[in-house]
Image 1 (cartoon, each protein chain N blue to C red):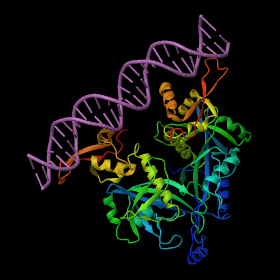
Image 2 (image 1 turned 135 degrees about the vertical axis):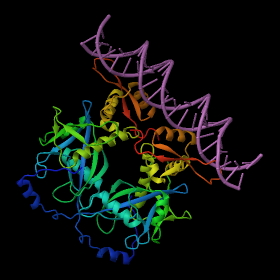
Image 3 (image 1 turned 30 degrees about the vertical axis):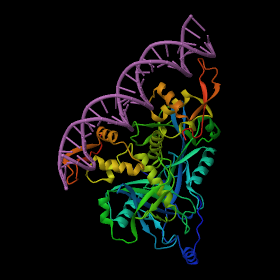
Length: 250
Length: 250
DNA sequence: AAAATAGTGTCTATGAGACACTATAGT
DNA sequence: ACTATAGTGTCTCATAGACACTATTTT
């Protein structure tokens, strides 16, 4: 969408005389919530802070926005640096700017969320300061509110800054988008059984969904196509594998 | 949601040594799209730019975010300064941060949208550099894309910066929210006839809606209550006036 | 009385939930 | 053969659109 504008000499003179440093400016960062579904639970990548403030607490991976870098590019860079992932679903969530949200200085943070299948995250292991935490919300439906992060024993992990608020908004956004946007597929491998897709939806919504009408809805949506292949070694009748069709409905 | 944290002497020492000016920082602004529905059309407040860049083009009212001011507060301040309005619906939309979106310097803009009934805007008249422009989109449904701004003769008004993109996203967001959030009422006076509410919905959606099922849906929603009063001097049977009940559904 | 819109009753089409049933690989 | 899950057919219920009709005010 780059627009070419022709500028008069007068306008060009004005621009070069413009001094952007006459006022103090806030810092601008991106924070990225990398979310997956594993074992019927929503999980997000958290990083243990090694520096003040909130040292020892868990935070979303984040970083400063470069002066010549778009917000999307900054978020993708953070994701690549902290999780080794690229080319996955990444979308802006909300911008947080309370003056006191970071005690160091004024920091405005543009929050993003990213979605990836669990398998893709195996690549990203090895850092002891990073972990996939389970997300838990105390509210139902799309009411909204903060999220808690839990470890493997379902013990709460303390969250830094306002990241409980950010993670809560991620869950709310995912629930809202699930019914009209094709985000479930971002959390699955290229081919998948309908039952797996249903599990994704249930993890995001935090409730069981009706099997029959879920199947019918998905098949009628035109978003998925059967591959002919089937699961194997399941201990029961194997399900057919489907793949996601980009832009099915039109 | 202010959290109190206790900080160790060590942490406090770290904080006071922190130098936030070691890197260049972008400018952060808010831009506010003040939207209303008038004569079956979506309209937005635009201001003619008197300075470079894009002098003479039309832009959303905006301003820099103060160092000790939340984003919401900055948007409310801009709305008060440029339109004399306060206490109306105001919500964050999206943050725009392309490095080249403003030729002066790096400007990251947090866009907001505000909703007010047409009557409230009469207060805001008098500034010849300000006008309510009609919004027009070439796409249907919630597909998204840029918006055009039209004057009283339906001639396009040139828009500054990326404000066509911002206004397009406003329309898209309004269409998406209409079916699950009570935003129609923000565009009407305290009491209103069902037909007026339907007109609001039609202006936002850009298409006609079924009268019968619209009435039933609204009455069944629990969001509105009859007042017993009726319109008068209509030239036909007067409609009953309703009022918006905050939190009807629970 | 005519005009114009408000408001009601009923039929139909669609989509989701419920439930009963059949199908099939692994053990 | 048994188990567990995949997948199908049918019924019911809720909701939206369509349509016909009645109600009420101004001119």
